[in-house]
Amino acid sequence: MKKIIGLCLVMLMTVGVVFAQDGRRDRNLLENGKDPRTEQIIRDLDLNADQAEAYRNLDNEYRDRMRGDHSWQDEQRDMQMTREQKREKMQNLENMRNERNQRMKNILDDDQYNRYLEMEKKNWENRTDKSMRNR
Image (tube, rainbow, N blue to C red; front, side):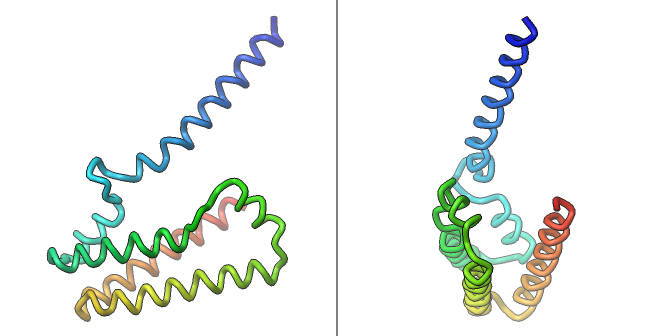
C-alpha cells in the first residue's frame, strides 16, 4: 500500500512539473501577445507610440536571436561544450547585447537611453545575484 501511495505522489509531482513548464511561456505574455516586461519598460521610459513600436520590434528580434531554439537537446549540447565553446557562446551573446544597445540609441533620446542603460545594469546585477545564490 505504501508503494502505491508513493508511486501516486511521484506521478502527481511529475505531472505538476510538466504543466508548470508548459504554462511558463503563456504566463509571460499578455492576452494581446505582448510581453509584460517589455510593456513595463515602455512605461518606465515614457516612450511615444513610434518609439514603443520600434522598441517592441527590436526587443522581439533580439529575444528570439538570443534565446534561439533553447530545447532540451540544446541544454544537453551545452553541458558537453568545452570551456572555449562556452566562452565563445557567451561572447556572441555579449556582442548581440551591445549591438542591441546601439540600435536602442537610435530609438531613444539621450535621457531615455541613459535610463534604459541604468535599467539594464540593474537587471543584469539582479540576474547575476540570483545565479550566484542558486549555486
